[in-house]
Length: 213
Image (cartoon, rainbow, N blue to C red):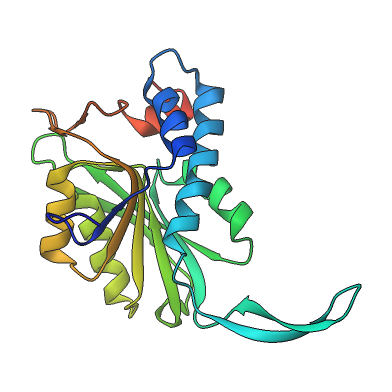
């Protein structure tokens, strides 16, 4: 957390920052970008799930019996903001293989920078689950705010957001509209440029994931 943004955790781990450097670089090709994003997503979800509740369960090891912790409480649901959020799913599902997955399709109007929804599909029991929204870039924050509006309309009250990069404008926007939603990111970058891109950023995450630059 930071003094300005109590809703934000920046993961400063050296491995995260090392891989983020290569995600930013224009020398990184599509295949490498996907692999790096998958790896960093796994590291970020460790932080995002740090406070999951546990309970003790009796097990037998090859040596003896013991009471050992297992995750308890609400089941998890990952919600990907299309299309770039899908680039984070494989890595996170490798860590949380039993999580359900939902998708929200939003695109940003190039003139207004406001989100336009074109797809919404989440598990029927999402209100009973803890939701982790995934989107590599928290720029203006308008898409994330709109996505979380829809998730709350579906009855969910336990929500976090994982983004690879965040701009101060986007974090502030989330804090204004959804102060209860905690954000986990690898970097709080400097600012947004006139086109709404994060600076220094890494360009358009969706284009770099899918090779549509």
